[in-house]
Length: 421
Image 1 (tube, helix red, strand yellow):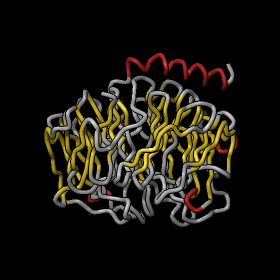
Image 2 (cartoon, one colour):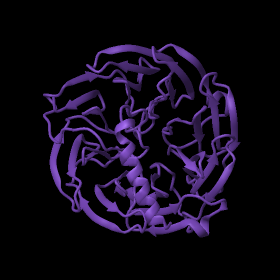
Image 3 (cartoon, rainbow, N blue to C red):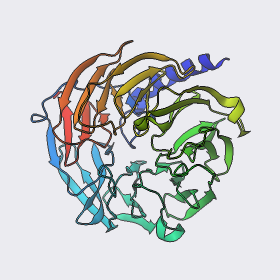
């Protein structure tokens, strides 16, 4: 069976399972780890002053909200403390939990609450720039809490910590990629005890060792595995013990400095589409890497490379076998992940900001939020077509989400809930 046939079968399986799985948005990437959802009817235009509800979020935080059983969870910095908030489906606050002193963000578009929370429906798992790392029960009580930077050493990177935790069957996993001793570690979801911790260190040009991306849980030959992007290497790890299954390097053969990993890869069938380089500085790179193999797969599994498109901050999305890549300055490419070829390309109108939020795909439409608060809605056809442009009148850094016929859009000050009714 060739790779094209396998990818088509994968897409059909995901579509068939969607109705059964798309009842929660349990992490920032969504129910399929690809920033897209196949079911539901979502608004394509709205008035920000006439939405289902709008609530003021205390403090500063740029994490993406998540939803489980129509309860909304997000993190922020409130009263100088790392804070987790829970809201019901009407926008009423259910509880607030503060977990220790906040370390504020350095960048104007950063905060101490950049990492997004994640849930398995039993617990809520959170991580902050301060190193505060905790599991909460659904009622907000603390299951366990620790500080990873106090335990394992200070975080040493230029900007604000942004890696979100991910969940395997047994553990919550954190990747720490910075100048110094980098590591990947798994902690028991119930007790918080360390299940395993492995080093992940590579020599890179300046700043290349610093990573802000989030791992992806995927299946390697039927075994639960973790895909990790950072330090200019894509690595697959066994989720049971953290050992490397395979690795792919040579993403920066010229040793260009200042190429940290910010955007995360997206998996399209059996291919990882990997943003690299600095699209914000007109140094974009985009790679297609076939999943699988063992050992060093650098020479055998890289399918294609582009030097004219890529993304520095927004993570690409995937929908029906196509990858959608938005660069920081507002060019979007719909690409074939098998070949890397552009199917269509468009350029959003210029504005007062770049794109930080990752694209959202819902109800056959793509939502792209720009830093200055403009949300563009595209119709997903075989061409670039903007069907609406909404000014939320507040900065947008966090990625929007879609679940149960509603859009949740977090701005600098507010959380908006937008729906058709």
